[in-house]
Amino acid sequence: MASAQKNLSVYDESNIPLAEGLTFGIVVSDWNADITHAMYEGCRQTLLKHGVNEDDLRTVQVPGSFELPVGAKILAGAKRFDAIICLGCVIKGETQHDEYINHAVAAGLTNLSIVSGIPCIFGLLTPNNMEQALDRAGGKHGNKGVEAAVTAIRMAALRKEVAKPTSKIGY
Image (tube, rainbow, N blue to C red):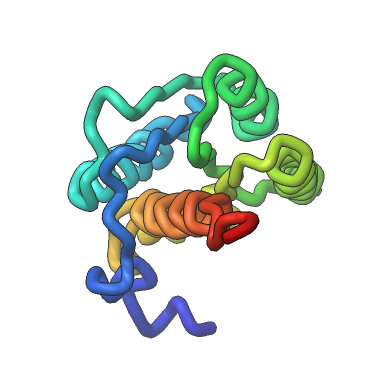
């Protein structure tokens, strides 16, 4: 497993576009709050580090990871964000509940991204146990919130870049 060998949140900062002027919604699940709030802090700090103004961030909390797509939809309907980051953690248990939730969140965020045109970032941890979750929420494997923020910046910048007219019509 690749994650067993490295911090997954290490990235080349020189390849990240300046995020000044971009707006971001962040949806955070309250379930497994120790994990998700650590992810949120990593996400928030990364956005600010890359030029996002505190006033250009809007954070909402939802009860659990299953509600992440609806939280993202509510944000998307309230204001035009350049990207919406969804942070949650579903730890595998004795049943298959994790599979149902993880698939529903992935499908919901994918569909919302396509329909709305706003990148909705999948920042959902899907670990087998609490130790793996802690390792990915600021532990030895980094912070998935940082990775989600970097992804959001890159997708928002791509969206802005492609939306710019490349040439004028006529002479």
